[in-house]
Image (cartoon, rainbow, N blue to C red; front, side, top):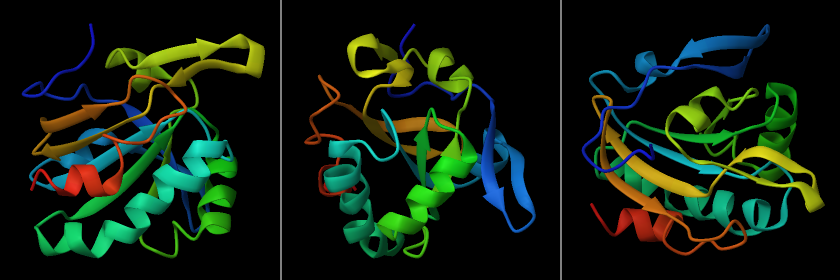
Length: 162
């Protein structure tokens, strides 16, 4: 079942890079009692993800914060080392975006957002989407029709809903 607006997010253990290396973090600890943005994408270093999706949230981060969003999380089915390197190379980490790894696609599958494209080596990856989450509940959800498109899930489109 695909997650929808108004649904409570399932709890999941994700991995982020901490000062001492990879650390597991419960999604509920990042969302409980907070207003956050989560945007998910097919993979680090892929075309649209690198040139459009991540930069859109870097451009709009301060505007989200001005509207009461406390954190912006980028979620991908990659390992935390790749996401940390990608966050550094894109400037996303320096911009204050937290890179969250879902390496086994457990959360991605739990919310019904997985897809595979074997010809290009993408297996059990995340569809491209963005959501505003308040206290663990999805308030706004924008899902792209295809993995190479970043229109409704970009930072500007999501910001327009606030």
